Image (cartoon, rainbow, N blue to C red; front, side):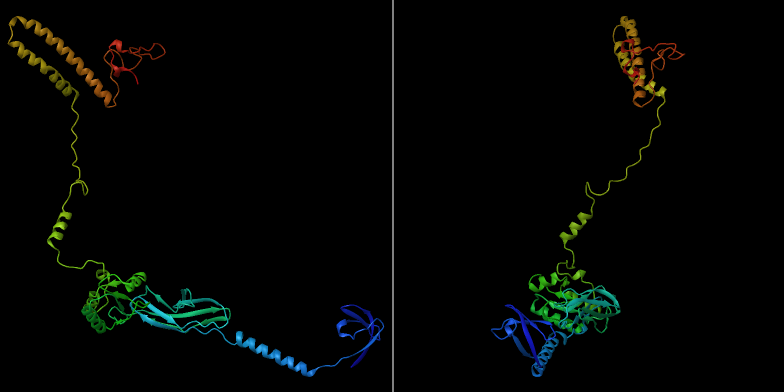
Length: 396
């Protein structure tokens, strides 16, 4: 198709062309013949290139196939789950490596009896897990669920049954440092009970048997919380015909045996009561004596005060009879002093027991001494030590 156009405005980048019907077309200047100017007429031929078009279509289709083959052809694979080992209370599960193709991983979850048990940590690197705390002789179902950016994929359910107490086939033993005869005897005993011995400490290792607590294998078993027992544990399981607890067979546990004289003596000493140890014996209740009547106290105090008097009378009997009158007068004075002391001691005792202060006769029972009408008619009579009152007489 041939088209004639008139050159209008010429610019360095774009030239304006005019059609016969006075329409403007912007055309690249680099595609026009050289030395053109405004008013020049140019002929442009327009045609479709079919060969070039088909070639471009082929190249585009090849590129699409390449992209699909690299990113769209592969998809994540369905997880394949299986049981590796089972014991009376635990199960070890393993699965094939996860194939994600070009999808992104979201999570890998383990389900037990249709309920989610938890997510698998580092699913691209971990291919096994151990589930403990299961019931003895019980069946469980497990399956994996893989969630990716390309969809969700579930594995087939795996039914696993835990063993009975008499089934020892699930015991997996890793041996440590053992004498050669002990190692040979252990291998024969393990074969008889139906257990197995594996090389190295693995996730399905149930017991680590050794006689010495050292070595890299022992350190790994301790790190993985695998029971470290002595060879006697296998012998005891074979003898009882069932799996036994490992508490008495730990490597660092005391071995049973007859107690020596020193041990028995120390035990007897430890059981004997020691001074300062144990609860004190119960205190015997003390019988409360009834309070003695006031008259008895007065008689006792009078007798105590009269005792020196009798001694004086006995001593004075050896003297001359002429001094009898003088001694009688002195005895009367001493007796009066003793009575005064007795009454004062009685007042002090009553004061200490928290009873009401007792004043001497003739002084009343309060600061209004000798008054019956009260504070309105009489002035208070202060009691002073100079009036013969002691410190007990002061109102507190």
